[in-house]
Length: 207
Image (cartoon, rainbow, N blue to C red; front, side, top):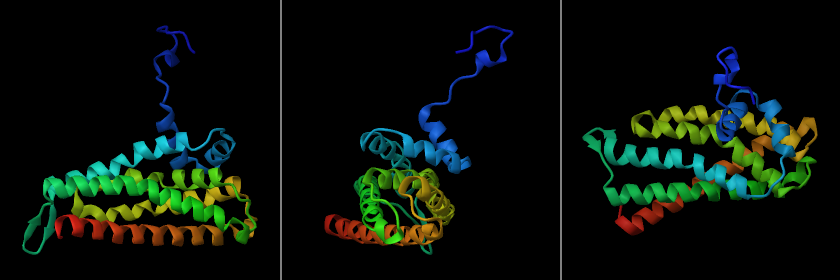
């Protein structure tokens, strides 16, 4: 710690919270951040906390956007009712955990096919932290008409690609193929859970 003195400019610098530092490093310096992540001890608990905090962004933003801002359609602006918005947000939040967990299971299961080492915790780390830009961009859901901008979340693919070598250890010539297969699996899981969510909403509200 630097002493707090007027002559010491660093004395007024505040430390960056660990969560914000992790997000910053993943987005700006992923190649140097992934080896640190790979070496971190601990099990699922810190990863679940990370999901719990970041997955709130799209869940809350989506709730506000769909319930209070509304979606523009040809006949006007459509708003979810309060119960519909709450249930959608809750399902979206819980499904964030399911998406990450199922994708990590698949990532670990197919590791030998790409010459990688099976390690579920590392696979979970890879998937959790790769989802960071997707959760951050969930803030866009505050304005549902701008939903298309969430495509910038494709930066998650770069995080996935750069995180595979230090976390799962595939040969360099198989990294891109491994990353593509994981991305496809994640898309299928998201699509399947979206269908389940639609079915739940139909059963509860008939729409």
